[in-house]
Amino acid sequence: MSKTNVLFLCTGNTARSQMAEAFLRKYAGDRFEAYSAGLDPSTIHPNTIRVMEEVGLDLSDQYSKDVMDYMGKMHFGYLITVCADADKNCPSVFPGLGQRLHWPIEDPAAFVGSAEEKLEKFRQARDQVEQHIKAWLAELDAE
Image (cartoon, rainbow, N blue to C red; front, side):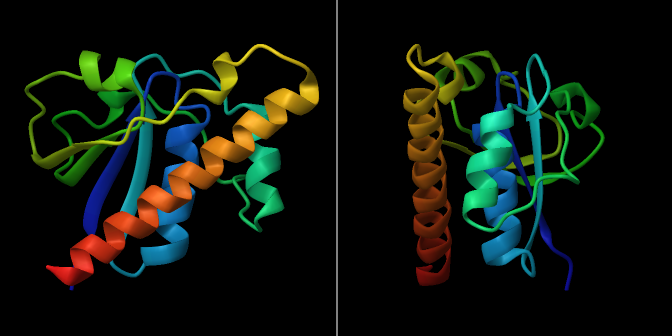
């Protein structure tokens, strides 16, 4: 049985979408092929790597990708935006797309504060992403 492709999209592909990609692989890698991309990709934020390591997930094989690397080249059963900017600015016509979802998760990289406060924002985003993944999978299983 072939896996359904899922694309997580945010602006920079540096935090939330990377987390979602890793969590989907962890919880349903047997059912879904997880991808992530950004509208304006940068490098994965060091705090993203750190907070994911705290829960036993290694992001060393992941890197930031541009949404244009995928647009029109692959079919995605789901496109899930994880920030308001990506939801607003993602092309409304996305060839090869099944269902589009939006999970509004605050950008931890945008938070201004001490290093420890910033790290805590990344932990909060990580936990929100994980909750969204688990709830979405439970919803799909109930259908």
